[in-house]
Length: 176
Image (cartoon, rainbow, N blue to C red; front, side):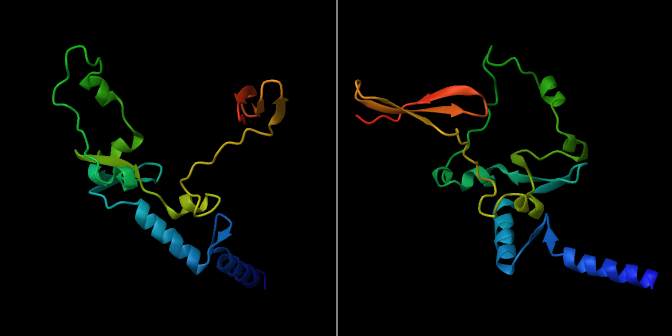
């Protein structure tokens, strides 16, 4: 019974744990949301490069990069680098440019007129608090404000303390 019991226990654990990723079990609806988000985020690539750490770097045409999904940039014209540099305009040499590299460059580089973008994986999305909050900035809270009233000056103001930096940051939320 020892070996059979061990095998049965292993199979049961595998079946129970398989639908869970990062401790989250996804419903069919959530799975569809994740797949839609991945499809929207991961643009079609001209070339893909696998890095040493397992990430995949997609070389996306410069005109198809995610920044241009923003409504204000829909018809934006990209300004390419000038073919010449005015005298005294830059001290940055081509030799120095070659020295700056990423680890994934060992496995290849992106062609001209493409931008390297790390491919987003399902696990990346599931690490977020929620599918909807993935990729969005969290607003820092400044702790509780102390209310000060200066009736003689005709202003009511709040003073906040930034708990993270331990610096006093003054905000005037005044009513006149």
